[in-house]
Length: 342
Image (tube, rainbow, N blue to C red; front, side, top):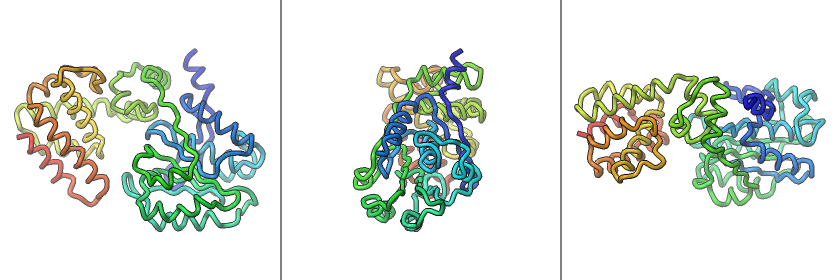
């Protein structure tokens, strides 16, 4: 019964394939309140020209933004896309001339200034369908200062019938002047037990709480984590790391395992070291690896608290470097970090 109720809350439309991948226009249960708010604004014709959607990756935020974009462009409906008009058909076919998606060239990279110059060009073009235009900026929190300044004027004095949707994980790293020119929406993060039930209803299997925590409570990320076989990969990596700390052997094998996870493994180790630090400080409240307590205890007995803190800081610094500079020698940096445990 719960599974049917969750399914009924979802309204699914396909978004065109842009830059080689698809996303769906979809309103998930935890976004229902935000979507209802937008529908009210759409019905009153008072939707702000620039909407800033702040929500974690893996929460379905792009699906929600896509639903808003499709509705704005729809010719027949004011609060939801009809799905049958010419605009909706073009949207599904990835040929809508008045919809533009801007995103970083690669995961973690900044959006370049040239891309924002193109945005300004799109914004001032006449609608080819004689209606509205929508520009969706994915990972807008990855706008560098120069790129952000490039779009400021357009956000401040927008062209008629042009709407911007900026999708971010956090507003903290954004230029305050950009944030101030947008109408901000922060969907409530669903509670942990709700996320667990939702993922279980989707996969028809039991889901450990630590899977939800590893994925920061993001439902779609937790679901994908299980579907992609990351439960086994995560467990093997954590065991290999604990074994390395204990006998100081297998560094290169461990480095190779970390590289194969495309950065996820480093984040998992960050969570593990945070759990170890908590345990060493005599608290187990809010542990990410709450169902792998024996592993956390094993690591906490193996290395000193000062080393944990030092290596955790170094790990976070390394992750930032690797994200911003894709040309770095990942293998060398990870090996050097692991060797510091010796």
